[in-house]
Image (cartoon, rainbow, N blue to C red; front, side):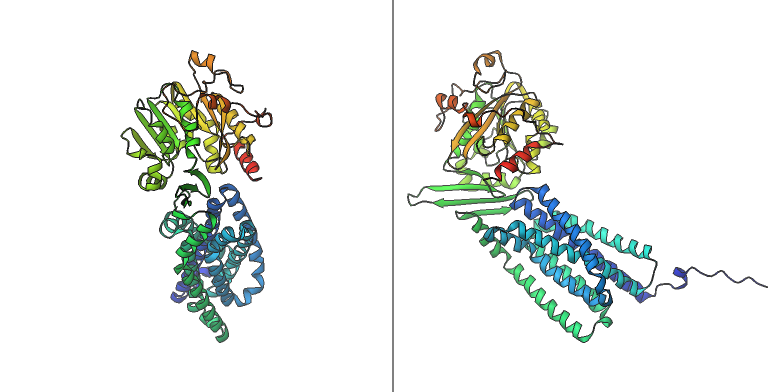
Length: 545
């Protein structure tokens, strides 16, 4: 009597038919594409907020937390739709494609014309999150209709495709979509892909589950969504130009969205034919040609009183601080490090900017480097007589690290004996805590400081900190401004300073005097990489203006 063969496991006894295997693959491909599109929508909202608001960490926290919460709500809301999983999934994908595709365009419009950016962002994140969260339960039902399998295996297959799609979407957004299409058109393009993936799956693999009425409704909706997305894509450039101009009082003559920031140059001409050129980075004014000389003379010339053969400029990609440095013929080498190569190119080639900086980048003494200043300083082995730190204000996580004890420690390491460093420190009037936090941070890095301030029509009251690590004996006896720390360098102009429009010895001496309500705030904590107190102060104080 022969033994009967053992029964095969259920998975092997009922192998997937070729058609079933193709259908399952189609569902998993749809999961992959939908996950990639969903993550692009999330990243697009975060990136737009960082460009418009500047607070990358805050924007990311708001968007991601709201969307994750809403995804849970969407998953629960999808439970009653499981009876009609195929048409419901197609409808959700069309709606998600429409709203996700136009999300950047709509938020930009809310920011430019309505001043309703944050309410619009919250509403958009919640709605998109609900729609994204509804996808997985419906896709799980569709997957099980092709072939029943245990819940663990089905979840593993579905989430593997979902997570890989998230990886692809996360990498495609900064390295493909933004450089090639920009934010508005990139989001619209992803919306088209999203609609095609969802509708294509239902109209091919699950078309038998659709009634004639559902098929007609989905067809009409797809035509409407496709028309809106294609039309918006065609007019996206005109929309961006119009919306961007609405943000600025003067005509926009150059605009560029780089991987790092939004760069805008405006120019106005008065009845007297005098022009005012202004540079904005992420909406923040960097200079006005009407009074930029006041800022750059105050930034550069007090630091040039001493050895100055080798000068390092950190930031200042517009070349205006570099212009003042190059007015000293004994400067042998000037190195400028700025993050964004697009700003350097603008300063070199745009006649409005290159005329202002006197073609500074064409000077053979200049070496311009496009790099992150923090990373560049870590690898630097050279020493400099003067260091000028001309960075954007510390109102975002990306810039707060450039006002940290660690950063100033790297700056100190790059200073030669008897070198001086000057830091633009924002407004002691509008942001006094941030201003004095910078001083305490410099001191924590071992630098002896002397604060001073100037008045500028375009910025208001603006402040700086001049500092040194190893002052000369002469410096100990001549530094004596009321708020100088022991061993601080003297606040003075070089004896051979070129003719200046806004500074002389008396003006600079007066610049070291602070009114009683704006004098040093005691007990300010230094800002560090792990505890960026400067960010808290800057965001809190500037929010009041």
